[in-house]
Length: 112
Length: 113
Image (cartoon, rainbow over all chains, first blue to last red; front, side, top):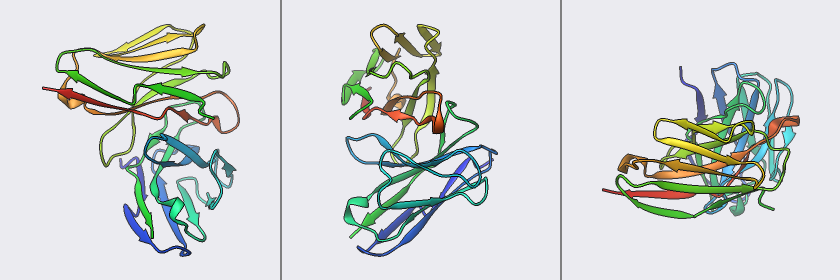
């Protein structure tokens, strides 16, 4: 039972490049979330999904897009990377809302 | 605007001592208050959680104290051990669309042997 798996674990991009971060969960959870973690700011919600085919904006959605075509996968896209998007990105899932969230080990992304 | 305010930012405790981390919130609609533990290079892991119908919850050496009228909750780590050295985050969420978690800014705990 892998839980929440994030790929890649590390990535370096140049400003303006695009990329997709993949999150996969094997717990049959309905809800999935993307957070970014920056020093001194805790975790901030980027986008979330309450079920297959649904997405919604969180606290800091600008510059990101998401898709949830399959229940077990939640993709986070950066269309034109900016240095301000240098961060550690965490994916999480929960069975339903207002339930414990289970986190992956993060993707460390640097934008040069 | 920070929905959940956490203090202190860092904490150093002797082995065997008590570690106390505090959080405060404003939104009275919050009804789920988890604490997460994070080790370097890893994702946050649920440590313990409480709902506002109880004032205290204990699991092993970890206790959450909840004061609904003051809109505050705290994590107490009894008999702190070097292995407890990590970053701790409090969070709050409410019923509703998305059930977003609002996280505190984290407390870096160091337990000295």
